[in-house]
View 1 (tube, rainbow, N blue to C red):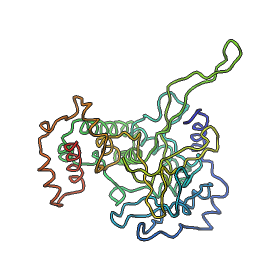
View 2: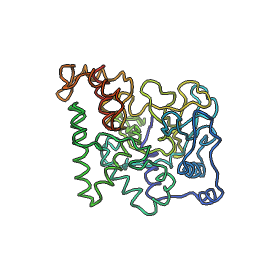
View 3: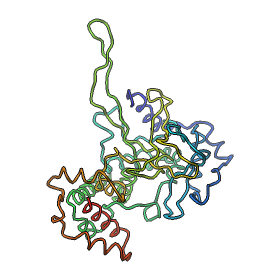
Length: 364
């Protein structure tokens, strides 16, 4: 766990100062690429990811392209990360230096930066990296690797659904969260005088790809006997985007890796992917997004998908609340009807998610 704000303040300052290492240009000129994909688990590696790998290698990243590479599932065509060799439990698969992380808030400022909304994080993302010419040039390999709206890598969250599709979700908590996000996006866009569409998509990037990193906010103080001690304070959090690592896909119950920080107290800390169990070459690397206790409501709202099975859903429904449907009788539709509609296959991507969501919660 992170033990001081010094390291995170360093990330933020490095980003705003756009400190480029001198070997970046020569590395790009030299070219490079990925290790050969392992068929048939992974196929074609996009060029944008190739640029990203060259950039990260020039910054000192390890295991990228040699131990872990980008590929697409032949079955689903979804982009993800794959092991190119065997790994043991607790082994580090790859790592990127801390100054390759993109901070979305200033940890030196008051408040909990990790709890900033997707809309505010999106606004900072645009201001710090996209609209800043120097930063945009530095981070071009990463920005170019990100999904674009409408592409096969864009997994729409419900705030991109039509009003009718949102109503079809039926679940008040999710419907309210969609309305709240859209309202905040419109308000912030107006205040910052930027495009609502640009901020909407930036908010999606932050919601679906950023990581919330814990910071121990304890301070050293002098006691009467001259001994220095640490006063415990509530932890603070920082939201960051982690190039390459954010290409890993999610599994609620079957994650085989975790994002892990090595030497967080030091300026030269590392963000890594660490194996939770043995991983064979060719296997997809999967992380558990968020805190690991996200229900289908949060997964659909923030990441745009519904997990086939989610052990958190029954707990969420049991806890209940005014914005929660806790019984089958509370739904306007039936499980049997939803399953029949899903079986037809004649659905838009958004309506398929709506029905998958309703079925998931009704089965819980």
